[in-house]
Length: 637
Image (tube, rainbow, N blue to C red; front, side, top):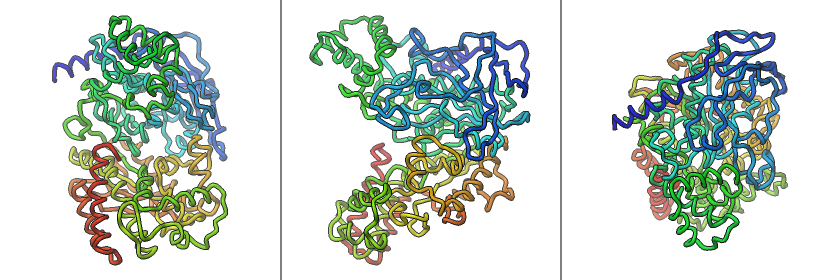
């Protein structure tokens, strides 16, 4: 194992050695915003069109950090871009879906609105955002976007304008290869280079970004010795991979992670190779040729030499994106994440360690890490609780249908069958329904919090470093109003996946990403709840700013913070919950922390304490809880 790791490290060092250096490292001139990066000069712009309040920022948009991964560079580690001498114009924010990494649009209005491939393979660019000052030595945040490792784009990041001013930091937002261009393995592509053989091209792109930051960020006024990575959902998973990568451990110093997609850590090189073989066979089957059966495709693939297979794969991936999505979808073009032929990265033992264990394979860093209260698991909760009709009705009124009930309790009585549920228990009252519903929700959600927050915080605290956990609760507690649709929203939608991002980066007053503006903002952002959520986000940004500016990640209480965010320690496990009424923030420390075993015992105790539940109800709930928790651990949650 040591020999493999040393070989891998040497390969990485050779891969990232810069071939071209700027003659002199100087910071940018605010009059022309030209920065002489190691690859060539770039011209930035003074922007201010991303916010209602028009915050002023300096930005350098679409900076090439690596050569286009085309032709022979496809399925290879990224290399330096070809150097240039004349300043590149990076001064305008004119990003469209044509600048996205190649991906499948599943008909979203904020993409093309059609089911089709969008984007480009020439995608390895990044944006740099900073306050419109000349202050030097600012902390640096490098954000890896989410999107199931297959959608979105770091370049499409205009919403950072307000945040960099509030946090007084530099924000780097990169594109990286997505979907099968970012995660793909096939035996014919193996060269003996452990980097390229890993199949982890997205992670290799991110490593290249971090190396670019180390080499260039001083020129923008940033501190290369104070770099924090961040990411939400699959971007959080990418950050977790980097915390378990021997190649990344010296390239950044802290991490802020939101709802990492840990249930998708399933990829190994063996599984990837098997999937890659099937994809090649599917290319032969679905390409316009005379191959009409799976057996024929298998036979032809087996007759090809390694060189022929490699060339064929590069040809297909390089020029036939619709066919790529069709092959991965086993005949139906679709998002790769819908297919068992796609993996969200590989535990190859070189680029990413063999296990994501927060133990021997983890390189600890000061950490902020959290989830949202309902995050990913409302659908199975709604189904098990027999609340599907209530859910359908709630969404109907959220999207404009008139509410025919006088109150939420009346809707529950009419739309939930109290005498029969899929889970096997009954309800005696609205109060009994709500108590059981939250137990079912917690049996699905809290195991995710244990894996995504409690275990990482324990490991980081054990290493003697600062660890701060959080849970975003705004919009999930039926006892705290949100101003409209009260009860319906908190129970059926709640503080769902990604809702922590508006609280962290304050999208209250600015145009956010398309998915946010078409979901959370449209459903539940009203004047009635503005004051409370705005006060909450102001406080949260104060905590993040303190974390970013502290080299060891210590969050000291300032006047902008209502309470001290207590770190998770070996002797005192705790996390902060974020919430707000329509008029005021509600931030508090929480001390109910678990392992999966103690969570089961905790929920069973709550079940046995239900005053209105029959013995039969309790047994059915206990049986459900015992099955629900292991499902998450096995990646079925």
